[in-house]
Amino acid sequence: MHKPHCARATAGVWVAVLGALALVACGATYDPPSLINKLRLLGIHAEPAYVPASGETVLRALAVGEADGANLCYAWAFCPFAWAKNGAFRCIDPLLQVDLGIGATATVSTDVVMASLAQAPTVFKKLGMAQPGGAAASKSPSAAQDLPDFYVMVQVSTAQASGGVCPSDVAATLGKPCADSRTCLLGYKRLAWAIDPKKVNKNPKIESFSLDAVPWPEVLTPTAAPGDRLALSLTWNPADKEATGPSIDPKLGQEKETLLMSWFTTAGAYDKERSYDEVPGNVLTLPSLHSGEDERLLTVWVVVRDGRNGEDWTSRKILVKRGVSANLHPLCAADASLAGCDHLDAKGQVVKTP
Image (cartoon, rainbow, N blue to C red):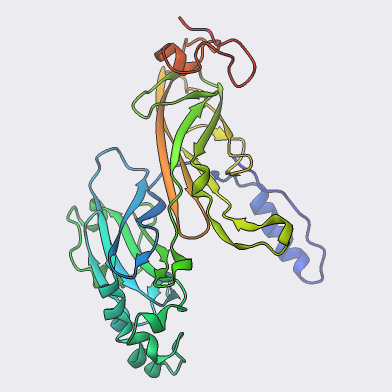
């Protein structure tokens, strides 16, 4: 559990107030962002990672924290211009909002974009604001190529949050804040309209996920001892780090995307919450088991983002169990035929198999 650093207030009349707040903060403990112990929205993937000039993109959300197979409710809507208002991220005007349905996935096409932008002159005139890209942006795709990224909004909730039945009215569902963040979440996905070829972007693709230097098949659930420290890493196709433009230093050639990895788990603690493509790995310390608890199944996730609306993710499960030898590589103990099980592990020790 993370305990905040305690600082002493030193300025004027704020000393007493800030000092009291510091005492409260120093007595509190907080779950790290990587710990999944309630409903969480970890990512929204679009394939492709933009709205094509002619075609469509399909979105899906990574909502975790509920039991596998739990009934989750969705409400999706497109909006070119949105802002935070009244405790929620909302479209600046209902006229611009295009409902995308209540399924687990949503589809956005150029037709959706144009239908929304057709209402933009009316909306911005009503708000007394200048329309980004000018009025012509609502009439012609080519005239709108310099518009900023658009938004797709989504609400994810448990069926129990709405009385056991998923809401069917997208506008009404997105029009009010979630009452309880443990059972209802509102998120959004930024999307570029790729009329301009420079906005075309591929999602990064996770090619492999390894535990202590041995590739970890998604279908394999290994067993490990409480307190074990597992070195986790992932690889991707180098071509997925796309060029984003010339570097300010001509000697460096083209600038490339930076991949950011965010790590999550239902139990245990990571050495770091995030990692980057230069040093993409992380270490997970498995949890201790409670008195009377012989084993615990946990799930780990890693979400990769390229900073240009592209993302990918993967997950694995591992069983923490009493009596398991910490000298055995968890994956090799489960399947000695895995690549790398006859070599040294990531710590330079001989991998022993049963």
